[in-house]
Image 1 (tube, rainbow, N blue to C red):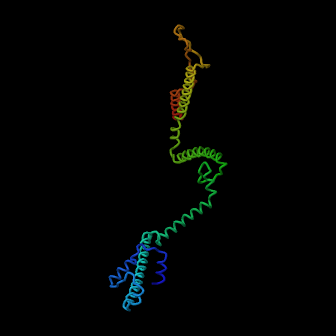
Image 2: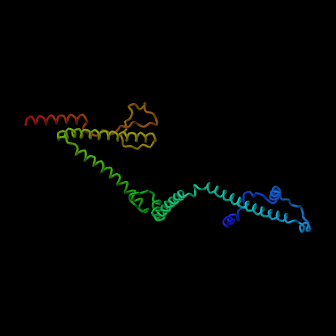
Image 3: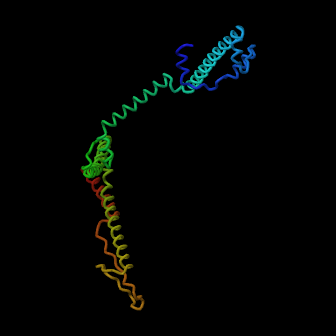
Length: 272
């Protein structure tokens, strides 16, 4: 038996050891060898040469049997090892190991980037706003946010102005059309002013009514007394007279004036 097989067999316990002294004796009996139970000294001295030869043959067979048992044990250990290798072969294959190496290389690169940029990452996490375009220190975040709010309103006004400018460039109508489009604007402005004043007066009236309901009323508005003192209800103040409307041109009056002005202009054009 070679040294490699002996070194592989040493230190390994076979799964199942085949045979023993009893098996060896039974095999020897099957082969025709007979063993006396306990031979005496005289019997050993008077034994024939044939019995000595049979004993040597038995020893040789036992040695061969021991050698075969060791080889079988080595084969069993090797088979068990190959079986275990087969179960983990997909994990230890060259392609699998290359994939693992590539994954570890990518993870190492990411970790290096994180370590190199750790100060930047910490500063970004400490900022209340994530500014991807303009880096701002944390101590100037409040002022910068206020500046952004103002810039947003200015940007909205600028966008509206640019849209108006583009519209004026695309508008190719003659000046007469401009005049027709601008003519109703004063009337519309006067109507809006009158509507705003009416809404303001209504708001003041509601505020006064609320004060009356609460019970704390001190207003310079004139009171309108009831006609019959007997009809007055105790606990209810006199009615209030709303403030007079401001003297201004009515919508219809402005329309009539514009119509008369157009008529006068047409007459002057005809006379000229």
